[in-house]
Length: 222
Ligand SMILES: Cc1cc2nc3c(=O)[nH]c(=O)nc-3n(C[C@H](O)[C@H](O)[C@H](O)COP(=O)(O)O)c2cc1C
Image (tube, rainbow, N blue to C red; front, side, top):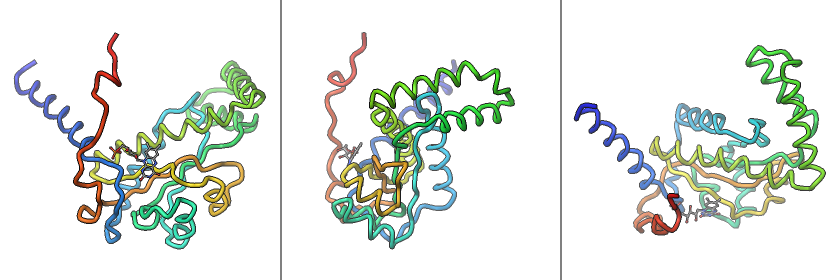
């Protein structure tokens, strides 16, 4: 590889890490700045592209702009300012149970997108159905299902950082109350993300360095 190509790769590596160092869990948002429709579209696509167990995507993401809904969500999230001040609030809600009908529409979707027959997908259908039924019967389905949206959250946070959009992941809320505000019954809120633009002057966290463990404590090469 030529010197120029090596330099380009190095620049790209640094650019990625710079974006990730730039991001932090913003506490104060600039209320006047809105995420553009194009950027929002990209963030939604990024979440859609997140992987999930079997690919079944057992969750929904509610993108909330409505100020009135956000006013009602705020007390359910211990009055955290990003709920009302950010550009949008995203509520990730996992499906509380996975039924045979869910598996059926999942398999149908594969058949449709890939132009495959249902018969050719019989093996997969049987395996997914068995796995889901086992999780429902053993009472672990919610543990499994509620983990999946976190991958989409990760994709959202990373993509937002790459686009220079701020985000705040939040677990500080009462799920039952959020479910009530959004009228959720089959799904349950598990994590929230606010997106928008930081109010650098008024955010106490903006000027503080990022705190992480020493790398060797987190990552061990074997
Ligand atoms: C799953 C999850 C839940 C979080 N919940 C909240 C929250 O409710 N409120 C908040 O201000 N920050 C919340 N955070 C932000 C973390 O405190 C923050 O990501 C962590 O301290 C690392 O700092 P940084 O993201 O600024 O680099 C949460 C982060 C994650 C990943």
